[in-house]
Length: 451
Ligand code: MYA
Image (cartoon, rainbow, N blue to C red; front, side):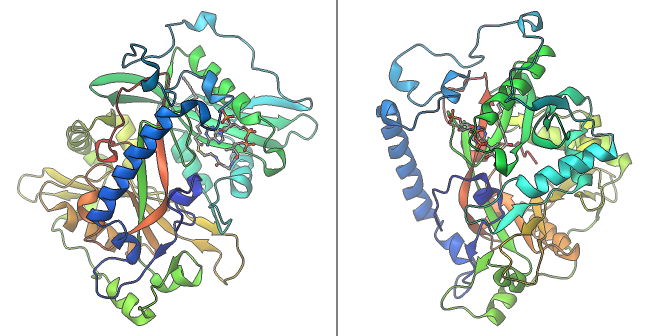
């Protein structure tokens, strides 16, 4: 698979195809290629490429828009300026921010999307369902449900005006979208108020017309009007300049279906019956005291998770209200389980994953949907992380998921190979807006999962 794939789709999973050879090794072949030796070579290559990028900054593809923005630039290191960690722009106040949005092409207008209205929810859902992230080969496209979008976008303290849309004036059709939700991040020990930016989407018929920069400037303006000056976002594409680069890994749960739909290939020496056997899981989780998370657990889960997140260089700072919103189970959206110690009543462990299916758009199969679970926040203190995550796989399987996806963030490296995840075919880049970090951050030091 093309490892240098630059579409978010490729890594964000629609087609993170991997080779499910399960012959002698315990891991799919995709994972074999990421064995320790190969990973070392990979990072060496990365370092060389980065060096080369820095040294030849002038010959890199130009980013007409991104080069004008307060983000780290390739070649920053080579310019020899005394750069400091922290804000890139000089401080401003909301009074200095333009009151009106920038000009759109004639016939289009700005709107805020009121996601409490069913009609608007449907419009956003339609736009994304038909135009959002696909893999490089146009086989799969993310299929966010309306319930998911409400969950992801109506977080505590959200602002309707950060859910930015562009409509055709005449018909009022929604043709472009970008969102921010408020959050707090800790980066290298400093706390920052941020907007988490997501769901940038332009109707296929309006692509390559430089509307994306206009949308990004508009969401920036609206965020700045509320006195917030930093943002965090992820993308498959390489832009100036990632603070970290993560990789998706995929654990087959229904290998037969994954092969049928072209998500996974069997290795040359493998057979379906062997693959089915290799990916078999116990019918029930192993960890004692494991149960669904409930509202009463929120304070203890917040404490457990906050302590865990404090270990990482980049992590969200979550209030109880946010933990309740983000982690309390929601049917078909987010699944969370805790381990409670029977005697002490302490919550010792947390499993969570969310449901983000992809539409199968290539048409060479009877299946319409790939049901994918995405690892969210997991904390293991009473059982080994590998055991906890094996339980996560079992729970995902019990909930009828076809595949379980995880990024190599946090301590995930500790279970990916052992639990037979295969490596995906692209990267997910992490970015900060108007905040410079002096050194690239290892994905194992990133503890932020954006949906
Ligand atoms: S990532 C998901 C992105 N969405 C998709 O992939 C869905 C399918 N694709 C599309 O809808 C379009 O292709 C998009 C581009 C909208 C992606 N992030 O209008 P254009 C730059 C940032 O002619 P189009 C997510 O949601 C590109 O490098 N910039 O292009 C996080 C070029 O600039 P430059 C991107 O193809 C979003 C310019 O756009 C991306 O018609 C975070 C070309 O514009 C991308 N994913 O539309 C957004 N893709 O010349 C940033 C392309 O400089 C937030 N481009 O290279 C920043 C923080 C803002 C808030 C700050 C507050 C303080």
